[in-house]
Length: 544
Image 1 (cartoon, rainbow, N blue to C red):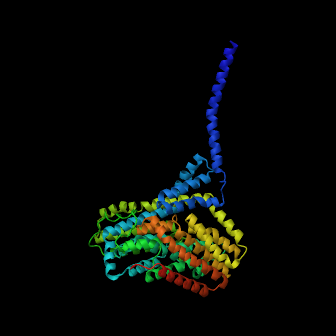
Image 2: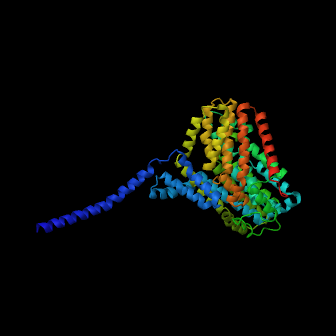
Image 3: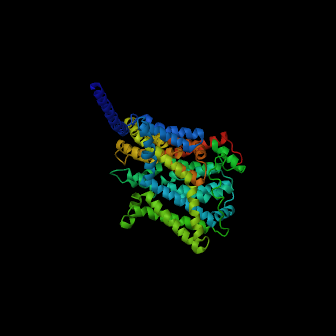
């Protein structure tokens, strides 16, 4: 009887123990997972912080497939950030990654701007404005050289913002470059090379506002203006484009794309996600050039108004101060919206399009931007992973430890570090925020020429890395603006950007010793010209 009673007690005890274990153990496991996720990654602020971006970039260039490459980079970053805990990794990818990137107010504003620009392009195509401009350009622009120079000129004129530049220049010039059998890869390069490089030397631009914000205790805009003549990568990129177009020099993968374009294939590779983007929409045969120019002009005016509005211009701030304090994301979203509304009103009043036809264009415009939105989302998520791993802190510590010696070489060193960081993270603005304070700490006197040269090296290197990086939002926008396969754009542009970067690096060494604008910039231009002439002799053009 006693044994039977003891057996019942043991069964009851075991049952209660099992119940308690079932209730408590999952909570302990979850708490351990959360503690592991909350702990600083073991690879924080080390070289491993850059590995996710390096993996994504390498895979994109090797496989020629950007979506999966970026996602694999995100997974690698999430594994590192969560110390290889599976549940925490999955939550990091989505909750702390993609969802965070898409709910960021700045990113969301850029996506709204991107979608509205796509809608405006669809409206202009349906109204016949793009086709009319193509007909006008076919009469006035008679050569391939002329078409490329016109693209460069338009890119230089639209200096307010790089996103706006990429999409506007692409939508306006695509019909012209297609008619002259210029490859989409070359158009992408011309767009990309007149986006960030132009914005970074324009005092009235969203980039000038961003750089000014990273300069504490000084007149940031004044320092930005002083640094313009020393921004060698931006200046030499513009010079290089013009020289290569005029001298008809092509090399690397771009030469293959241009040779195929002359035979009628402007894409070269089977991947052509935008090949039928406008084929489904018949433009109004009665459309005129004004149906393109008026919406573009409205867009420019309203985007400028939107940016200075966010900077407090209508609350009493001066134009320059308002532009410096502007929120480009909100300003461009507001400006593009009102520009689109006015374009629809004008089309309806002129009876070029009915209101119903205008509304039918909006989904088409949205769909045309889906590839760019997808790549941007993954790129922003990957950037978030590298940030959580302390990539910025790693590079900042590296720069701080190297800044004490060889001051005359410091601008060249800063340029290289900025190139690498911007390339790996896909953000030039983030690179400004890391390196400009370091440069100002090393050279606190802004009247010191080495201070100005070093700050300009931060900006030039950041733009260079941004220009080369497959995960840069500007590079993605340039692909979208030209309607070019993204990997094609990156692989063809890279040799050109690296060439200009090498010349810029040598120029910064000269600047560190001479501290003279004329000597350094003049030397850089001479080196660039010699380099291009050598490339022309080695890679002889085939009737380009």
